[in-house]
Amino acid sequence: MNMPKLPVHCPGCNAPLKVSKLYCEQCNTEVCGSFLLPPLSRLSEKEQNFVIDFIKAGGSLKEMAKTLNLSYPTVRNLLDDLIEKLA
Image (cartoon, rainbow, N blue to C red):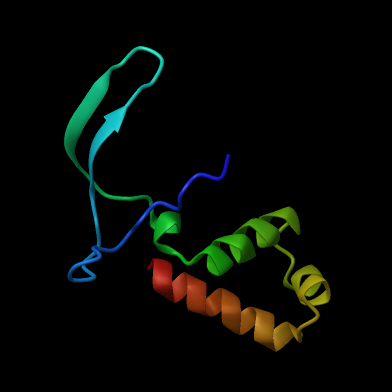
């Protein structure tokens, strides 16, 4: 089953969305409030995949460059962009 992707921006005004309710399917417990989405969920799918691959590569930019068939400086720039986006 293909689950829909979690929306992170309002479809009406593009403002960041917040979580207001969580639900447990097993016991029907609901938790309501105003919660921020986790920082990584605000990244695009491509950026999230980069983070996952980077972790799998043990944090090695050299390995990432090899895997992605990109130059080391290009991979470094991609990582720097993510760091800035998450700051």
